[in-house]
Amino acid sequence: MKTDAQRRRAKGAYYEQIAADYLEQKGYQIVEQNFCAPHGELDLIAKDGSCLVFVEVRYRATMRGGHPLETVNAQKQKRIYRAARWYCFQRGLGEDMACRFDVVGILGEELVHVENAFS
Image 1 (cartoon, rainbow, N blue to C red):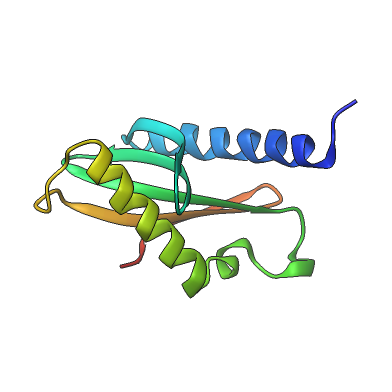
Image 2: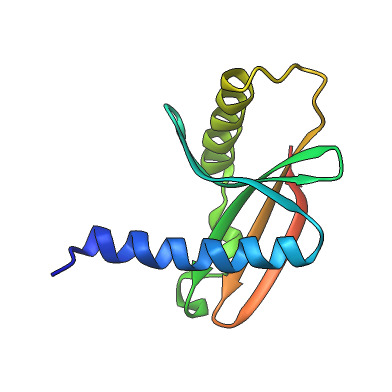
């Protein structure tokens, strides 16, 4: 029997894969999924041309808790930014690497992709 944490992780992986498939259809190349850093996890890391894109994936079944895009607050953005810096350090990527932060929000069956959602 799965625990609540295992069920949440499986649901998260399912929606992250939906987001990855969507981005691949848009021409992105998925580089890595679920990269764990000391400051947090990066859901998806992709390439859009020469730009490295760190993608946060958020899912909500209903609007009851607000739109999933609204959940990427300043604190979450800071964690993602720190994890991205760690990723670049670990991979030996220099300061000159073009990077951006995207968010994919999935509300029920609707998917919204926001490029350059924060800096």
